[in-house]
Length: 110
Image 1 (cartoon, rainbow, N blue to C red):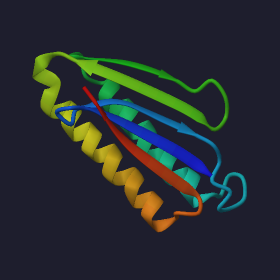
Image 2 (image 1 turned 60 degrees about the vertical axis):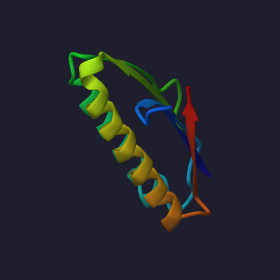
Image 3 (image 1 turned 30 degrees about the vertical axis):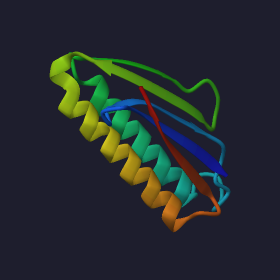
Image 4 (image 1 turned 90 degrees about the vertical axis):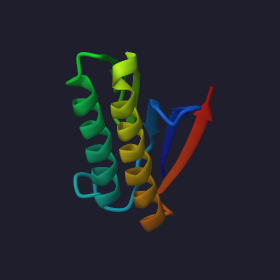
């Protein structure tokens, strides 16, 4: 089971995402659920990292574990909101389609 948590601030701006586990929906290297979650999180990391007004911290300390945190200048608010919406909707879509293999939690923090 993959467990993903997306954290948004009170305004809906992306703050962090953590993913852990293995879906087990297919063979190693051919698991569609793992592939979908990986593409969503890696794309978010690449896009956020490309911005000069956003500070990004990420780690993948072991196979099946990924974390990303972001904070930005005031001019990055719209971009962080879009990144949060992208990850939230994308991961929830995977979870809705494959509930036995992926669980997503969305948290809002002040």
